[in-house]
Length: 96
Ligand SMILES: [Zn+2]
Image 1 (cartoon, helix red, strand yellow):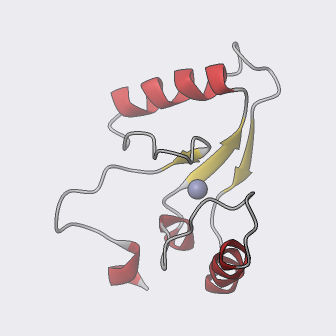
Image 2 (tube, protein in one colour):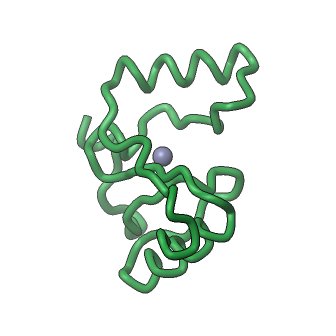
């Protein structure tokens, strides 16, 4: 990823419940910089991270992430990387 965008940077990893609630409130208030936050996020249990990078670098990163077994890119949230969760498997809601 950094060969495509040397400035690619991890911008978020674990976040608190309070931070998730602030993101939900910001989205509800119309903040377009916040992608529709879920009621609970894998960030809250340290299983997701976000990367700031060019679209080309993010595409390379997501292709590699999926080769490693990670989840596919979420539409509209290209910066987000999370593990693949089997149906009925681990969820943030179950662990919080
Ligand atoms: Zn994320």
